[in-house]
Length: 399
Image (cartoon, rainbow, N blue to C red):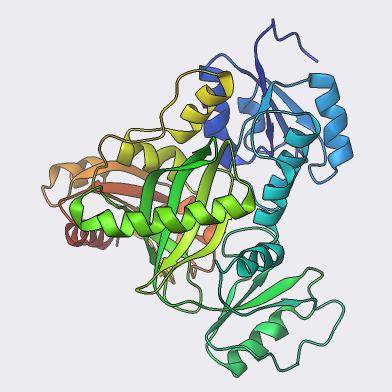
């Protein structure tokens, strides 16, 4: 181990590309950062002061590393199933931050559902499926439409939307050789939203509520988010979200953590699809939230960990949209120039990050991995309608 010269030390458990921003923010604030990952070539490893290769799911192996480096805290990052390792280490070593049970409930969709269902906070049907142990061709007493998805992890990987029994049978055929658990749950109709914020001293702080655009059924991959501005028209919506998410975090025992929640909102309910005590990925917590609110929740949480003054409450929320490049079955022959877009007068382009190359073929959008590496852009406007007009025009400039 290197000499860290009496610096405060933070550890990142999982060093994917999504961890880079948090690592950079920690180092900006004088923290010596250890990055842990099972892949020595993980994208975030070179950004840390010290990179350590260790099998993340092996809590004893991770604990052995923690015993050696003696960090002051864990720096939260976007991560799926192995978020529970963060909770385990925080609890075992009495570190500041989220503890083990909340992380396990948040990464196990079946246990998550059972706990909230018992408290009347998730009133849908949900079944556990084990394709490696049992026949899947049984009749489930479930109301369609329904969602079949992995029990563990996050995102849109292996998520199937089933409108009827035929769809369900086809989805089951796709997973019959799987070695992991799945859940089958009743689908809720409505508009999808996400929350970015924090829970400090047991109290929810919403930094940004985002309204999402989703690809058509059956994939349902988010391709865009709008910032929900703080005005009188949105007051009732914000109150409904705050009240429901506050009840959920209390049941799950969230405290002293960042928060990302995926919601479906209709006239009857604010339905919590998933919730995690960590920041969102896909250039949302690190780019879109700061652009919309002026608040970098990763940086503010680092201040909290250091015992410094922090702030998760924005004074103003800008009317922005982040849009990903959801082209499908298309060869890109011409890519618009950023300066031409900015000077055209047809859009208010705030940020442009296009990784598409001329001549590149755009496959079908199936999940986050199939679209996020293409890049994104952010526009600012007067209304959601205006933002949609701008982003539509920008996408039309690709040939």
